[in-house]
Every structure is written in structure tokens, then in C-alpha cells.
Amino acid sequence: MIRVALVDDQELLRVGFRMVLRAQDGIEVVAEAGSGEEALDVVPGARVDVVLMDIRMPGMGGIDATRKLVTLPSPPKVLVLTTFDLDEYVYDSIEAGASGFLLKDVPSAELVYAIRVVAAGDAIVAPSTTRRLLARFTAPARTPDGTSVDTLTDREREVLVLLAGGASNAEIASSLFVAEATVKTHVHRILTKLDLRDRVQAVVFAYEIGLVLPG
Image (cartoon, rainbow, N blue to C red; front, side, top):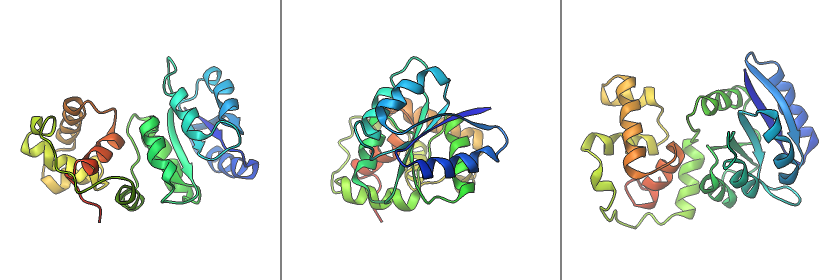
């Protein structure tokens, strides 16, 4: 059972998400909060696996709350919710430790899929929104300095480029004609060599150093 917390200052949105998730097998809404401060009070004691976190809330916002939640002894995964796909705060939330982000009008099936993926330890990177977001808030003209990128093999670079484009492990495996288990091994090695937390950080890294260009 995936235990989910809903953190949003708009009660109607929480009600909508709760109704969608209650209809799903293996997902249970165990906590709700209307602010970052309230989330810090209720989430630790509720054994939450995934937090759906709003960014803009009165008092403590979603970014600061995310930063604090991911430092808990048994931290939940955080999926940030945003109204606009070019919200400047999304980039900050990823740096704060979020495992990805979703638009608030995300289709129900995509919301459920994202929760399951994040709960399994992976990260959600929406290709279209990610490319536009990074085009605005990173400096793609920079050239890799080689200090860490050169530790990657040619195949690992290929995997990183495809990953940065939003491809799943299965899609990367199909593109490179290798087994999905092999892709998982490459991704693990990439994260280890570059000292990155997850796929989201890997995507940000690839754009920031110019390995992948927006658009």
C-alpha cells in the first residue's frame, strides 16, 4: 500500500485528488495539510510514502517544506504540484529534493502513474515542461568542464542524453537495443559517478553543463 499525503491550501483540490486516489488499488490517502507548517506536523507521524506538494501556500511554501521533509529519518518522496508548467519555483523545488513535478490539471491516470513510479524510488520528469523550464532557468551555452562528465563511458553519456530527454528505462533500452536491466545499471552508475540523487538531478545536470540543449 502506497501511503500518500496531500498538501495544498485549496481544500477543493485536496478533495478532488482524494477522490481519484481512493478509487485506486494499492494507494491510500493517510494525511492532508493546508500549509508547509502543517505538513511538517502531520507527515512524520503518518508514515507517508509520497507527498503531493503544492508550491504556493500561505506561510511556509512547498519548497521550504520539501527541503525539510526530505531530511527526515525516513523521508517521503515529494511530487510538487504547480499551476503553470513554467513556474520558476519548480526548478527550486527540484533542487530542494523533490522527485519531480506535475501540473495540477494532470489527467488522473498520469497522477496515479507518477505516484507509483516515485514510490518505487524513481523520479518523474515531464519532457515537455522540463525542456521549457530548463530553457528558461539554465545556461545551456556552458561547456562541460570535464571534471565529472569525463568519468562517464560513451554508453553512459548516451543513456544520460536519452534520460535528459525524458525517456523511461524501457524507452532507453529500446533505443539502444539493450536489456532494461542494463539501462538500470547504467543509470545507477551515472548517478554514482556524478554524485547525483536521482534522475531529476541528472536531467538538470545534463542541461546545465550543455550536454543537452533545450528544444
